[in-house]
Length: 307
Image: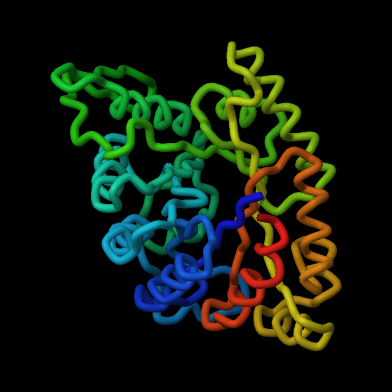
């Protein structure tokens, strides 16, 4: 089981804060540092000092880290034209020496679009399918050849399909709870399917749907990596769990039901249940970015038991 650190900077974080967490992620032996792609805070927080851009952040981290993978859960398809996104991600992949992964989703948070003047189209899922085809098609086009695409939402003619990523193929993540269209998209375009904030039972059910969709698309279900994203809150005792839960505005009992919370032993046990459901990678949603002792504890007493 791989453990990855997943952050939500729109809740309030500077680039320097994210750099500190990313370096701790690398030093403590975690597999990757991922971040959300949002421009507006959620819930009862002030969000200060304001948002940071996902791909500008990852470009900086690409030059200041050496080992960890870097990516998004999920880049909002509404924020960027797919041709521009393909250029951005390929460039950051070059800057990192081939350590980038792209999680791409349809976009959903209407308020942030209104706040920053970003169009919020009614039909987002069909756009996402075209975006996935364009981004992956541009990267896969042989050097010296051109890429064309003529869809309902995007039109590309004689694109040189440059630049190329450093990796032969950048891993693409698709995720979500949708019972039919989401598994079909994952089967067609994804290297990894991510199930966000879901129970063991719901995860196992959705993984099965993706496997079935992959078989229908002519792929083996084992071609994809299956993963979960879950909020994390670990403590050496109940008091420490309660303190960390309160720091992120949550209750310990609720986090134990809906995330990975409790003692290291409790969290290891629950991760094991996700592994039995088919998950091989967990994105730990870390909401208090200033509590580096939390990461140290997870590394020493949770990750060490999963190696």
